Length: 286
Length: 345
Image (cartoon, rainbow over all chains, first blue to last red; front, side, top):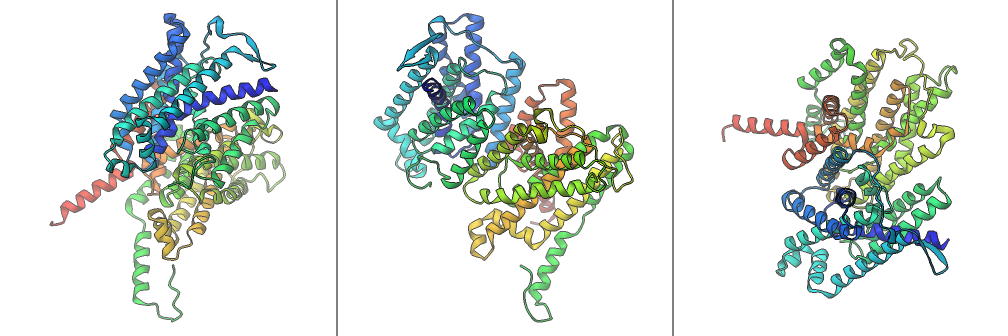
């Protein structure tokens, strides 16, 4: 029981790292970016390539995946995304679905449609006993890394100058601009960091979730659940939502495999109807 | 909306409004040509009939999205749910009604499909009344996912991932049997599409349709001048789900098969893309979009079978960045420019 719970937490932590960038995009620029999963896929496939073909150690792949996806994110933000901030939500949805289709076809072309599996280094396989429950070392590793990242993000957001500017820009972009905060630049930086985190999540995820070219579509729904349930005004909201979703998903698949997905989608629809601004957001939506 | 004066003689304003509405409802030459070509295709493209009937069915699905998106401004990613419900309803009616005279009748099957999808549409329409675009997107997507999950799990009824086999509808109107070459299927699908199109056309050109466009333009002001915004949205969403259900019913009857693929996410997304290709808010957008979409898929799919998705994505990105409003939007813009040039400034 505790083992499954911990598995769920590891999964949820991973979902948080994957989705947190999306939460900034949506909260800051009111931009619906369905292509977020493509950045995670980029990180995942980079890790697979580096490890299998160049023999780069797994731990070195993680920062590489972060940098690669962040650079990709920055490039796309500066060239394509910024033209779409003032367009309608429908245009944004169509544009990002178009990007997803292209990304999926490109990965399919380069790697084929098969699922990719990564051979983890020996020190990350096996199981340890933790609080009387047996848990995979890799899952523990994911929990620790993601927990550190989440704590780090929270500190950056609450205790630094950049964090307070970012929060000001999220709360009211126009006023923040009026106060002399360079919202465009803050956004470009956070978009890159968010994409980078997605890439890192993708790299970490290679050991837990299997990668194939349909990844961005398959996980898009999970990301959307995380941000719509968690709200976009804080990062603790999505964090809790991601953990809840991870635990519920793993528990559901383990105990009641027949109705697992059903329960999650129903909860999502209910939350959206009763609290459209998210379960954990402070105050009413703007 | 209609003139509610009690005098026998209508006021001049009412007469003028009536003239405007009738003028909007008049059939133009391009429209007549479009349908003439569609029916004529039966004779000059006899080898492509199954592709053509698929286009007609997808066009009907895209038309149903146009009703909610193009006229009422509701962004939906879940129209595939109603398509799938309709497909299974008609498929089940034809499968278990085979032999029992009225139940396997195709037209009755379509009625059942439309009614089933419409019922679910009515029930879920209350969910899309609240919230922003993102919430609506998520709720419609969520409903589609739930339906998808149900279809996959209810194996005893739907056949699960194997699909529903043995769908054998009776001859259309008791005369024309579904043949191997898809002759009956095409005329049947196109006929149903035409009838439903005429009805949809009458609806959107009516005062009711105008009020929907007002709601799309500004829901707050529409409410302020006394429009029952929620009631109107429920009505159009339900109507659109009936349309999508009938499209699904047609698909199940003409292919004699129904599978979870009919409910899947890409079905909803593809139909939305077709509408956007053609241009939302013109009624013809979905029909033209579905022709172009399937033609592109057929052509590019022959060159590189699995990578046509790449070109689809590229087209979509280019469309959003450079050509807003789809093909019909482009035509409308060109027409406006020509007209403006013609007038002395």
